[in-house]
Image 1 (cartoon, rainbow, N blue to C red):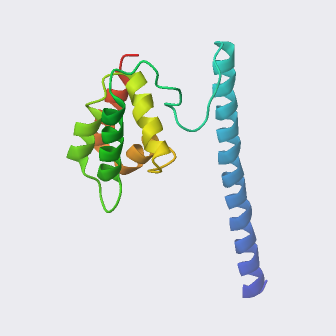
Image 2: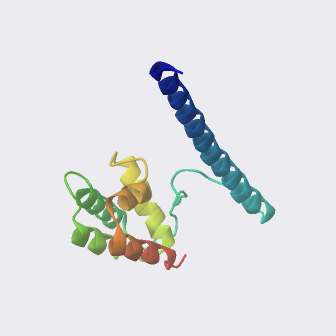
Image 3: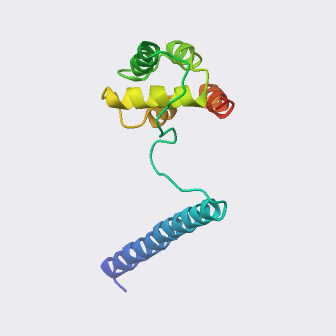
Length: 142
């Protein structure tokens, strides 16, 4: 066997193994997605992809100007170079309920700051800051 043949066999083997691993990962993702949507359907809910805070935000105790200011402050904190963690924390801590979070997220999107406020925040945070944000949003009352 020549060196050229050995290299061809090695390259082919790597491509085959890589394809098996790649498609195996995608298959597991599809199975997990299907399992999640089946569980949601079994419990009588519906699955919505995208912004987890979609909704009208009706019943929020914040005024529309407060909602707009919080959305703008969040954009200022996560937009541009780096993240202003202190401004971000101060901004999202002003949100008293899940309904207000929906209102702020809708305002954030409608002002053209981004398609998904939650995703923008999560992509800018890590470690303890991300855990604090996740804990905060999970404990918000309706």
